[in-house]
Image (cartoon, rainbow, N blue to C red; front, side, top):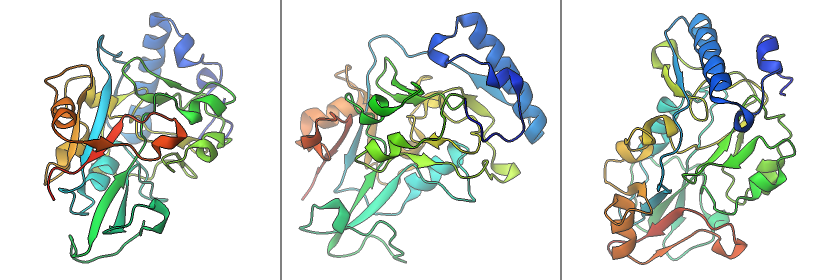
Length: 274
């Protein structure tokens, strides 16, 4: 269990790994967390554990020709997922790339352009690839990370020990370490949470994109796709030929980042124009 807690909680300390809990045990944990967060933040929280739907495999797509580098997806993700503003964490990085370049490390990860898009550049959002062969899962020494049936690589925040082996293993730099408790303005707290997604995290653990499970398992789009002003983000069930992501993949030739590493990402990139 994680030792860097914001106030010692014996119930949390003796809690089982989420994968090993019975439905009754999960229900008790959810009730305890709702009470804990409601008392701590002074707002009524709901914490669910909605399971994956059958015959569902979530995937992302990114139409590079439509991305304008505005970072609306970045900040929508921050707002939706109770991500700390101080120290600020981003699950999505938008890389500013010079046209003709394909090496991610040659791009500008922290560009401060006043006006986007810019001539001579394209923009490449990068987040957790929700890999089918995730190296982060393989190296976690306490099984705090695993792949859910709908393809999302999940984290049990109460089992993470903060060793950061997963960060070193991830070739996409998608996993972040929470150096502090979540610093979130009171008026911006999202009280609609899921155990495996956007519930408030404790200090000293890792976190990353979780596919907005509290939204997507209800049939909604993730925050990034909903906020994108140009429709560059695509999302849906890869097993459903009528889903948004499948329609895009069936129409355009797509590629995966660092596919040679055999991580088998479920985030696809393509150009619909130009």
